Structures are given as structure tokens and as C-alpha cells.
Length: 122
Length: 107
Image (cartoon, rainbow over all chains, first blue to last red; front, top):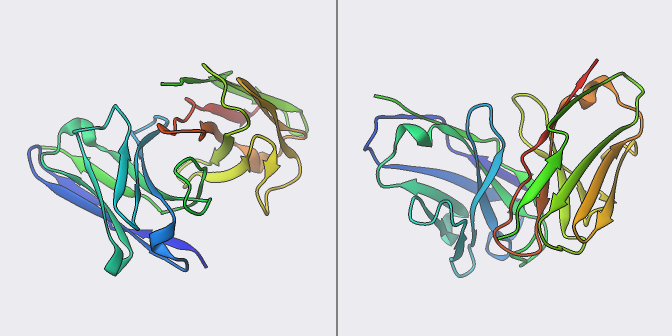
């Protein structure tokens, strides 16, 4: 079974660093792009960026470029989303999702991880 | 970048009604469009890809159509379990933008 399992909920103070993870299993991790999607409380889905774990080729949404870093570790089949300094406005649910088409940057997403809730509050 | 819009933003319909949601791209995207369903408190679920191909396991009351800039998602007979927010997503090229969503509930 293809599965993405995300790390647990995080509570951070403004200015702290944060790294959340998404572990893939049941497929060849290096040959499918993995995306990150933000959902702020009560709001819609926002595509943040995408990484190809095979060579770490990464593309960002203009809205998130420079605000977050997406990375991947082939050895552990895990993708990461990190912040150097979180803000209250980063409070949201974050989902990882796998591109459904082998090797394609442009693809719909299936499956999705269960989500990681990030809360930033002083 | 291509912008995605959806209409209506919300709707309320009776069980058994036919429901249609529209998604529009600001430029042509051929048929590179997917639809997702997100039930309250749940993970988004892929319903349709390539504008009209039903994902395995999705009930046949869901259908999609369109190409270019205008797309529709239709629920032929609304069921109580269809209460959710529906999102379109373009995937012809990055950024892989989602539409703002359409919230569907039961009248």
C-alpha cells in the first residue's frame, strides 16, 4: 500500500525553527515528486512547492519562495518542510502529497499524508 | 501565473439534487485539471483527474467535464455523505494552483 506518514503536531513560539517530515512507503520514493500543501484555519488549499527525491530538484510557489525550505532524504524515504523562523501566520495544517504520475512535475496528487498541525503562538 | 476560480463559493441543495460546480482557469490548461473532495476535518481525496477520469473507487454519481479554461464537476444525485468542500487543481505546469473551493451542504 502506498502511504505517506507525517510527523506529529507542533507547537512553537514565534522566531523558533521548525522541520516537519513526510515518510513515504510502498513505492519507489525516488521516482515520484512530493508536494507540500498549506491549509490555514478555515481556509482553502495552497500549493507550496514540490521536490523530486531522486535528485532533490525543487520548485516553489512564488508565494512561498524564500519563506520555507523543502528537502528530501533518499536514505530514509522522507521529505521535509522547514522554517528558520516561524511566525504566527504560519499556523496551519500542512499536508504532503505524492504526484500520481511517475516522474511528472505536473501531476495531480494521490495519496496524501494525514497532515501536520503547526501552531505558532507566544 | 495562471489563476483558478470556482463558482459558486458555496451551495445548499437537497438530497437527490443534481449539483454542478464550475472551475475556470485564466489561461488554457488543456485537460490538466483535477478535482478533490475534502470532508470536514479530513484529508483531501482525489475524485477526478484529466478533467473527466474518475479515480478508482469514486462513486459514479461524480463526473467531470471541460477543457481549455472551463471545467465542471457534477454530482448527479447529491447524497448526505457528499457534504464537503470541493477544490479544482490545475497541473499542466508549476505552480500547481488550487481553486478557492466550493462548499456543498444539504438543505
